[in-house]
Length: 322
Image (cartoon, rainbow, N blue to C red; front, top):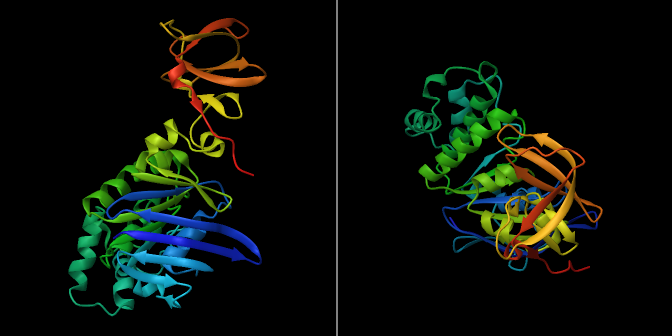
């Protein structure tokens, strides 16, 4: 399912939380809406779902218009054919895993082959052996997979995820990132995923929409967003950066301790060293700001080291519009 937003806006109590926005999410892609708290990413997701209505603009699922302010079209959430995975899982504690997954089918009165469809959904998330358990008998990761099974059992063309991994611990979050991405790909679903965690966004997504103050700052592949940020905000928010000025930066991996032809030389004092397990994160000072360099070598704090940068790796940005 392709999702297309055209000129959508949204305000609450006179405060515009979504500025005029266009966005096309390709069918079968995994797209992440990334940004800090309050940037509008969840509001954008809820408008796709039909849980919020835009003030202006149109929303299309493939060639079907599901919302139009001008044409007075607003298809309700239950008729948009979407799956939704919430942040808190929203499982019924008094229902078994089977009944939690079956809930959407029963609500839609789609009870034909219900047993088969529920077990197929549980099999897709590797929980067929837990059908008769209750949510409190499951781990956090298992509860997350139940919520996902409930979303896919209705056979949606698209699943919307609202920060579904935020309640999990760090190790489990990493495992679930791989699992969710693999299942979405295997089932050939379109996925829209909301998060403020750039690691989740970068590792899972085909494309990322970076939002700030209700505006889509950049919509591109993870690689392009990291290597070619469109605005200073994107450069600050995604990844670490060493700044020459407000519009000039270089990523930490572009700094080297090995001289090479054509590279610029910087003699920089070491202000700190952190051991990260597979590398040292070296904190340097350049013109009053801190820079980061990763190296297998551990220099002494207070020493001055030679750092080399290929000018081709320096990123130049346009000034942000006010």
